[in-house]
Image 1 (spheres, one colour):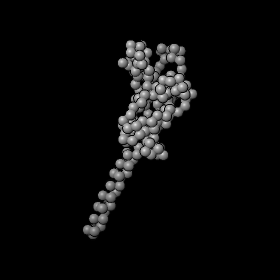
Image 2 (cartoon, one colour):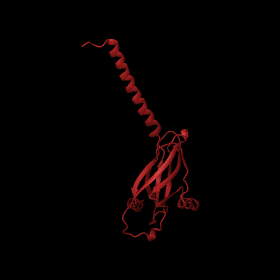
Image 3 (tube, helix red, strand yellow):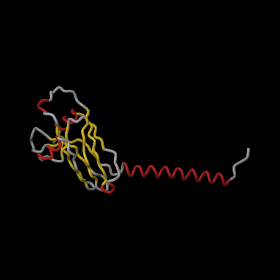
Image 4 (cartoon, helix red, strand yellow):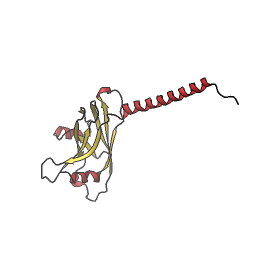
Length: 169
């Protein structure tokens, strides 16, 4: 069996190194475009009046990236909650009829979106089982608003939202 020529081995090694460099570059580009700069989102609550027994639930959005982020809309699945930009009557009405929430977050900014129950809480039985809820936050980077982004999911349950509201400072 004949040994391959030394030039052939060198060419194969260069091809291998080039292929690995190409895969690393592709992985970085995918990470840069799809993951870096994603807004962070979680459920939180706070009392608007100190000492009050009721609290308000929110989805807190934070932009950890170096460029602005535009929040296009937020949806709850199943649709038992609406999302309002603030506590104004107009924002609450738009949340009930499911208008889009538009929020612009600069670098390191945060914003609280109000979670609005779409059913009367007094008519919900106390022993109702907990339901899973997924909030999907649709967003774009302001530096490349044409590039679609994967929505940010916030998975929780109705029971967890109530427990977070009860524990609000």
